[in-house]
Each structure stands twice: as C-alpha cells, then as structure tokens.
Length: 177
Image (cartoon, rainbow, N blue to C red; front, side, top):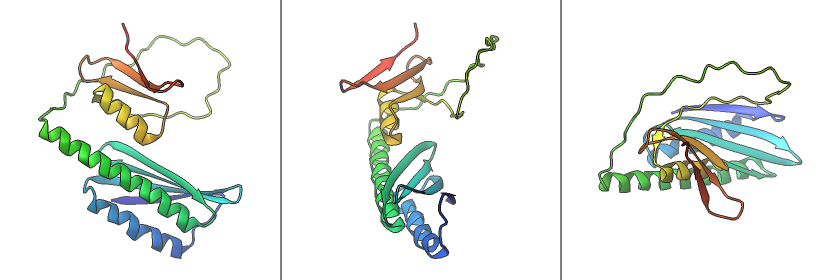
C-alpha cells in the first residue's frame, strides 16, 4: 500500500508520521486489496483536520475528523475508514454468496459539441472513472464518500445515471430517457 501525506497550513513532525504509518498499514489486515492511501492534514480554527482517503480496489473510501490534537484527529478518521472497509468487505462477501456478477460496458466517447463562450469559472475540476454498478451499489458508494450525489453507469441499462440524497430524506435516481 502506498501512503502519501499532504499538509495544508501545518507541518507534520517525523514522530507523527512514524505514529500514523504503522496504523495505516494495519488497514490491510481488514482488506488486503488497498491500493493507496492519502492523508491530508490541515489546521483551521484551532483544530487539526485529518482526512484519510483510501483506494480500496477501485472503491474510494474517505474518513475525516478534527480535534485539537493531531493524533486524536487521526485516530478518529482512521476508525471511520476501518468501519467503511469492514462494511465494504462484508458487502462483497454477501454479494459473492448471492453469486451476482459484474457486467462491464465500454465507455462511449464524450460529447464533442462546441460549447458557447460564457464567463463561467470552475474553481475545481475533478476526473473520476465511471464504473458499471447497480443503483444500490452507487448509493452505498455515495454514502461512503459522504457526498450528496453520485454519477455512475447503470449495470442493468448501460446508461449514465445519478443517485442523490433528497432533502426530505431518502434517495433519488435520475435516469435519462
């Protein structure tokens, strides 16, 4: 497992890194296919914020927490990641027992229509792979990431869909016609 540290507004001491690295490597005892892990440490409003993002065999898991002490924030974020990895592993085991199979579809080329020139400024641009999954799997992935929506390719129809969290509670699914 590859471990990267990113700092913002704070420096991580070598003792803190020595504290974090063995604990992060213990994540592999829960699930052996963790590809890489990124730890982002920042300091805002008198609190250390630790965000741990792990690529678990193509599924992105994220845990974030804050505390006045960097080690406490790290331990809380690590517990969040451990809980998510355990839940994902049990989900995969249940899925194997049900003998369901993944269906992969080829990606279609992006739309190449010319875009009108407007004064729109994107503060952040993010590229993510779109994977074939069921709406239930997409909802689980959205919850693991802590997002309000998730774009995915529907394994049943092969079309791009969006699941989202409704303000009134529950979830919604957007399907193209």
